Length: 100
Image 1 (cartoon, one colour):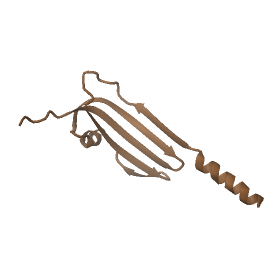
Image 2 (cartoon, rainbow, N blue to C red):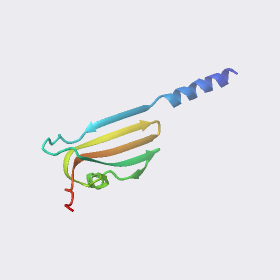
Image 3 (tube, rainbow, N blue to C red):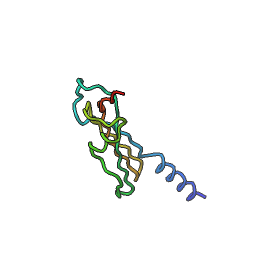
Image 4 (cartoon, one colour):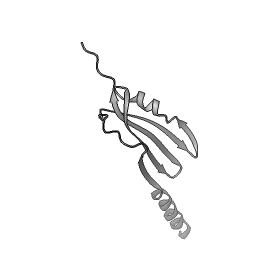
């Protein structure tokens, strides 16, 4: 019974420890560009095996409308034990709307 209680406490501590979320700005903010659109691209890792691609160009293309002028670029990280999520966030102006 004592081994079971010890194992339960160790498992609870392992599951409740290790969650971290960090966001950093990579570039200085260009105040002349309006923050109209935001694009994001993410990369996921499990036990150091990754999936995805973080590029500024892909984040710009993922915005609606696609970003043409960049206001700022940020990097967001989330860690939970052996699972990680790394996102690149681009804020800026999209293409001007076509006149009807």
